[in-house]
Structures are given as structure tokens and as C-alpha cells.
Image 1 (tube, rainbow, N blue to C red):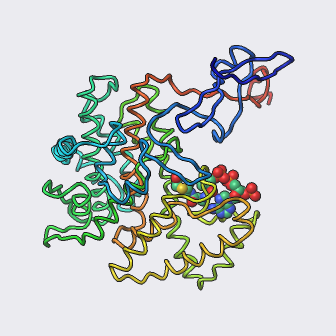
Image 2 (image 1 turned 60 degrees about the vertical axis):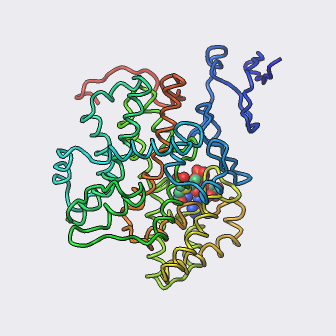
Image 3 (image 1 turned 180 degrees about the vertical axis):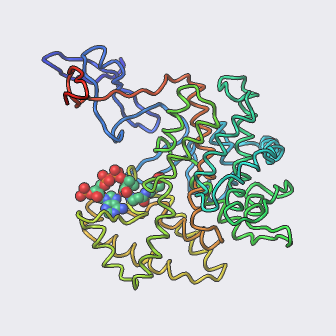
Length: 428
Ligand code: CMC
């Protein structure tokens, strides 16, 4: 006998199916509730709404657990490469050596972008935020590959679109930075691995030989893995929502990039550094800024603190914090921002306001310090997040199209005026 939940409305009892996930997450399937009873459920911000059944990522916010396809984030961050994790997320299993090589080679084949796309960059103002540029460029890819417009093509053709996107995003991301500095674009060099190739396109100059410290490559690899997926967050839900209308992958991911840009989501990593810089400039009085964050009359929040799902600790923040210490030590960097960050963390973690609301440092609290240490400019931080989140967006979009999920279309409770007659303008 399958389990059911009973709900009583207007004196009538309705039985609704209960769904249990593999990690024993429980849900009441209310999809037929309106048809049966005329009621909908109301849940602004989807705080308590499961929008899909997914086999990609599991997270337990109370216990601080994050698994990609069943593998703990701690193990993947320590042992795997970012492309290996991308393969895992998108195709469901860790690749064999042959599968990984074939995946890497396919990505390498597509790292160049169409030369005409280079001309788009010329039209952007010098101060264009790279997230705005990246989102437009990713959407524009659909115009160069019109065959990608049908998301329900054969698996082989869908793969081609997926590989093109993974290959071209780092090139476009690096070029959006080069454009902002008016420096020449560097073409990809496919003898490098995926992460090194991105760093090469970002930081090399045609006038100089290029070499990169392996500590930097390794730190970036870890950061990208930590960002690779996070189940139904704001940008991923956006990708799924746009994709549910049968929109193509490029446009769906471009929409995800726009959602990620928001300071309450991925844009927080830029905001954290700007906040730390402001505190340092202001004399480093951490208590004053903690008090501001607690003051309900003051809109200021401690950026990099709090999470919709993690209410104990963010396991990604724990790994990043360690990685941050290692990178700064190995590169011999003494960053005053890190001292302020550590003080802020200590004060906030001991403060009743933060404790009672379960507000802990999230992944964005430390990631910016690492990006800064490896030379990534502040405006590029959220682009780095998008770079990392790409395989997750692709995996979720792919799962949604393969499961033939219906178009996303929530209901509402209408609170506006009831029906009234039009009044000619002179009589109003
Ligand atoms: N500083 C001060 N107070 C806070 C903060 C903060 N960073 N975050 C939440 N609160 C308070 C909030 O004012 C509210 O207090 P009260 O109960 O007295 O009204 C309470 O904590 C609950 O906050 P909420 O806004 O209802 O929680 P939420 O789940 O809707 O928001 C959040 C989650 C991440 C948007 C929020 O914690 C926040 O704005 N944090 C700062 C931005 C940030 O770091 N974002 C990155 C998130 S991690 C990356 C990602 O996955 O996107």
C-alpha cells in the first residue's frame, strides 16, 4: 500500500500521495489538489516546495551534507578534476579513463568561438559588467548553431550542443575580461587542460611567455567543483523553468547566468569583497558592521552569511576556508581582507542574532579571497561562479528534457481589484 497524507478542506477529506526520496526526504504530491478541491498551496520563494524529482544532487542543510550523484563533495573536491565532475553530473556516473579522455578531447575540439562573435565585444561599453556580456554571448551562441534550437534532438546532437557550451563558455568568459581591459583576446591553446586553458586566456599576453603556478590551477579546480551543482537553487530553477518551455540549452543557461548575477545569489561573492574592503577602509571596526547587519532599520546584511538551505554549516565553505589558507600561504600573500574576514566570522558566530537565525558563512564568504589572491578582478567573481555552475545547469536541463517534464507554470492568489468597468479618461 502506498503512503498517503490526509488533508481536510471545507469538511471534506482528501488523500494525497506521499513521495519518498532515496535519502528519505518526504513530500506530499499536491499536483491534483486543485482539480480535487479547488485549493492551491501558497509558498512564496518556494521555501517548502519541491519543484521536481531529481537524481543529480542531494543536500541536507541540517547536517551540512552535499552529494553529487551520491559522491560526497569533500571526496570530489580533493580527488577529482573539474571535467571529471562535470561528466559525473551530466551523465550520471564517474567516467572511465577512456570516457574521460574522449570527453576532454571533444571539449578541446570546440574551444574556439566563431570569429564573428568577436565583433560583438566591440559594441559593449568599456565598463560593461562581464556578467551582462557573458549572458548575452551565451544566448548568442544559439544564433550560430540554429540546429540547437530544437532541444529534443538525438542524444548525439544534444551532446554536441552540451560539449560546445562547456568548451566555449571559458573562452567567452575570458574574452569578456580582456574586453574590459582593452587587451587583445587570447585564443585557446588546447595543449593545456581545461582549467589552465581558461587561466591562459585570462592572464596571458601575446608579448610574454605564459606559465602558471600549479597551486593556482589546483585551487581553481577545487573552487569550480564546489560550485558545480546545488540542486534547485535560484539560477538552476531558472534554467529548468526556461527550458521547460522547450527553449534551447544556450538560452536556458543564459537565463541562469542572469539569475546568478543577483547579489542574493552568485553576485554575493563580489559583494563580500566589496564589503570587506569597505570595512578595512572604515578602520576595520568589525563590531560596528555586525551591529549594522543586525539593525532592522538598516538594509545592510553581512554578505556571505546565511543560506536558504544550510542551517548548520555550508560544507563548501569548510573546504574553501582550508583551500584559502593554503593558497595564501603558498603564494606568500598577506591579505588584510582575510584578517577582517576572520574577525567578522568569529564575532558573528558568537553573536546571538546570528546563532538564533542559523546564519553561518556560506561558500561565497571565502571564494572571493581566493579569486583575489589568484588575480581575478572583483567584477569577474560571479563569472567564475557561472563557469563552475555550468555542468550543474546542463545536467538539470538535460534531466528535465529527458524526463519530459511539463512547462513550469505556478499559480497565484489574486489580491487585485475585482472586475470593474472602464472609465473614459476625461471622467477619471
Ligand atoms: N545578515 C544579516 N541578517 C540576515 C542575513 C545576513 N546575511 N541573512 C539573513 N538574515 C536575517 C534576516 O534579516 C531574517 O531575520 P528576521 O527573522 O529577524 O526577519 C532572517 O535572518 C532570515 O533571513 P531570510 O532573508 O528570511 O532568509 P532566506 O532563506 O530568505 O535568505 C539568503 C537566504 C542567502 C538570501 C540570506 O541569508 C542573505 O541575504 N544572505 C546574504 C547574501 C548571500 O551571502 N548570498 C549568497 C548565498 S550562497 C550562494 C548561493 O548558493 O547562491
